[in-house]
Length: 453
Image (tube, rainbow, N blue to C red; front, side):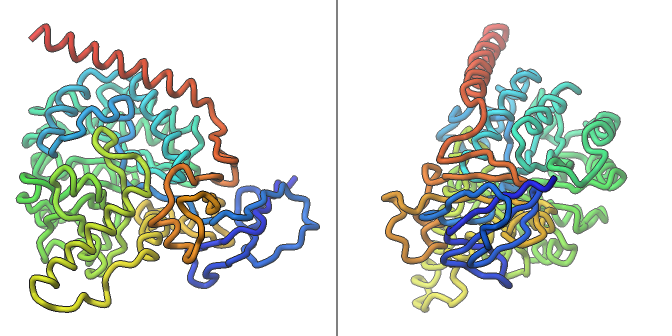
């Protein structure tokens, strides 16, 4: 029996150039697939009707890089630089994380995503201290019903062992186990990637082994490059080129200090880019390179990165990237006494970067990222009658420059409603309790470690 849902009379911003925007439009969803987007769809279909009057309807946001496991230590490093983060988080909290902490973090963190209109997540999970840790992370992702790419990362039991010319590769047998047990198919809500520390942090042998493992298993690779005081000097993409490892299966996160030759290497190899603008400006990674990526023919995406230090919603990232990039260009033009270029970032571009580009970077553009018939129904409706959005002159600008999490009225993933009338349809109290218990346990464990040393 076909299950139908009809979203009626919303302002539909499809992000599909062939369809465009519908100031008053309907969306028909059948068995989780968008089957029609039109100004008016006859109501004689047997469908659950959701009234979208006063709502701006957009594709779900795509977060292409988040360390979701860190939700129990939210806000623990508000003033941290990137160097501080390595010590305060990766060398303090990470070593005492249990599988239960990972489960709590991924459960609460993923529900946070859904609540904020993020329907697709790349979970950069570098907390696999035991084989039970990845199982716990994947269990939580599965339970929440988000669309996600689980990126299997290293353990983090010692900063010295894992981040300073590390000779320890991710355990290939366990990565193969996770692939076989949880991701035998690439067609489900959850898919798999490999989150690797990469050159600069690991020996060439480890880098080569990890890239080879990912390609053996047919899964994409995601790696931080060219950020901050140290990694900005490593020439990481250049090293990957020297090792013959560049390819279209790799996402490069941050990219703040890529050289011109490295930008060309990423573009020529078909690589993709994820930018975490709030973290990059706040923690000292460097200027968010949105326009640099675009100028090299790439389609940059946005990501949250760490809630230890920044908010976990896409609205913040959109505005951080938009403001930082335009500030940089405006300052350069003022200094040179030149008019600003016509290529200045626009509010519409930012919505495309947060949705369609994100799907492209996550390797899911055939399934999500736009409200296109034939794609899976990942849909978000924002309450544009709220005082912080009304009156609406430009629907795209209202989303990118005015909206916040409080406006997220309806969230649908794969045709399933996860938030309705502004309320998550999940056991939020349980998630909060588990993540608060995890916080308390982690603080106690860190205190005990300090007493023993």
